[in-house]
Image (cartoon, rainbow, N blue to C red; front, side, top):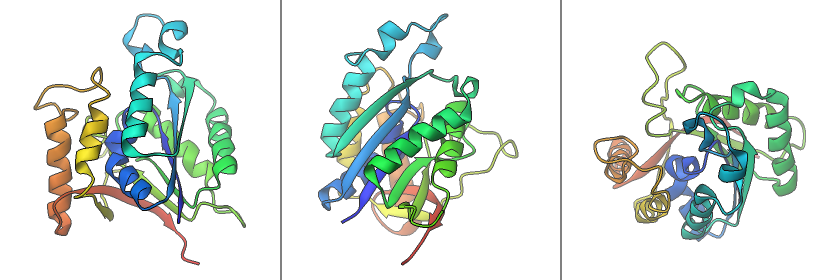
Length: 229
């Protein structure tokens, strides 16, 4: 049995990036802990109203807890770092937050963002997780995987950042329905087809990733590190 830590920038990234894989881990008996770093909504406002958006009963917080229950994750922790402003926060502060969760859960598998996304928060989380997971002796993290986020990863211009070139695929044919169900909790974040963050586009992506490796549906990742003991 594995202990899994999913570290996402915003509420809904955990589902978009690896929701079906979370469900697969959970049904296999693995413990899956989800950590969301930024509050996810105040970048849409002229001024950041933390009281409205960061309250534990906010719309996005409620959605995150519903999604967590749908996927069968073990725990969910939400922080209130500023949305789409993580470049205004010292990277060390984010690293230390991630380190606290690694020390608490001692995961052997970590999932987080790809380095080349358009969204600055995704890139900052990637850097923080890599730093917090550096392979020192007795460090628990043995497998580090980076996921894609529709409407961010594929929107990056060629040559502007590292491309997402998946080399790790998880067959989620039996779990894609749970991912889509969990996404339905995030009604405020979903868009209409043909937007990449629509239910239909998310399903199409899973079918394409599956077809790429010979299964009905898959989630794709880039492997950062895998230590076989």
